Length: 284
Image 1 (cartoon, rainbow, N blue to C red):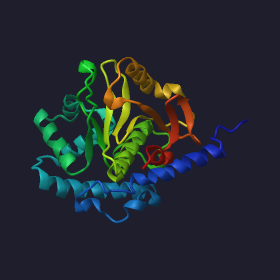
Image 2: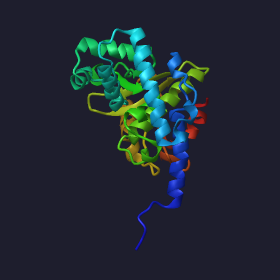
Image 3: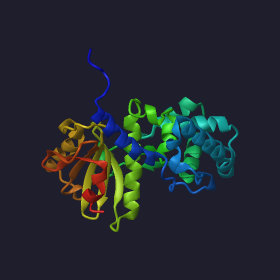
Image 4: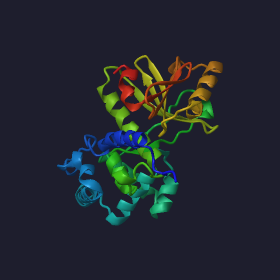
């Protein structure tokens, strides 16, 4: 009887990416409050699922009981924690304030106030859509991302042993890449801006990197075997730009960030690459 376990080489590849995901808890530089600078962050997952859970349970208690109270007079910290968890489930999604308020059971004013608190305390970032002059083709609502991917994993109930099989692996991967892109932009000598793209025909591209002579569309896919379907929206946007050029998107290039063993061309201007090739690909 054949074994149904994954081949050793596959398990080894997954462990390499798990080590990359140890960066989920490795960099809290986005945070400004003292409670974020808790010793042991880099080793939270290395202590196992129990240590990871205990670390973030402690972090949440400190953040809610001290930082949040300093920023706003929240009557129910329990509701605020539920709000943070609801944001975690929406990481990488277009922000729908009505749905968010309905799920938590709070007013629209509370939604706006609490989003401001999460932004001010560097827990979330709202990524704006690219607003090129395509008329009504583009959406106007931002996408929401948690800044700390380790906290995201905790709020989603993900531990290191369950990460690979989690239905939220795509969410975690995209959020992780977003945090990496923000770091690269902060270190870039050129003025670069980061956006996402979505139009009225539901074509969505995870990220648009514009400036410094670089116009790059980026899709995030948790796959080892990429194909052109993974770059469908990028290709469709390129086809549209051939008919209706836009100066901000001239010479647009496409990248699919995934888990291949090396660079895989997917088209004349599109390539699938592993994460470690992102910086040299961007010339940073």
